[in-house]
Length: 59
Image (cartoon, rainbow, N blue to C red; front, side):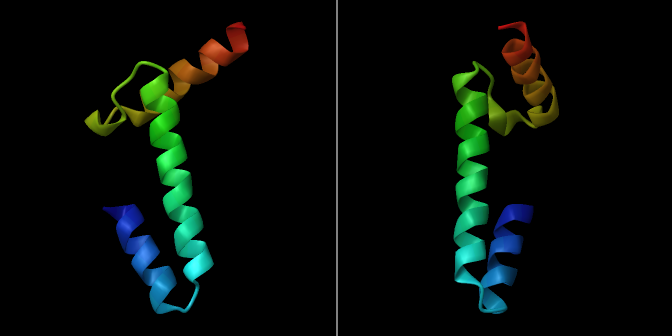
């Protein structure tokens, strides 16, 4: 919801490139967390991010 509002505000200010970049960042973040084996849409994004960071550090 916040991302959508931010994208709309960027468009209203005449910054379509910023709106596209915000959308791309959200998709990348959700794809990364999904590929890590966690459901990003469940509200546990912070926990999933920490787990991904620990996984990367452990490699």
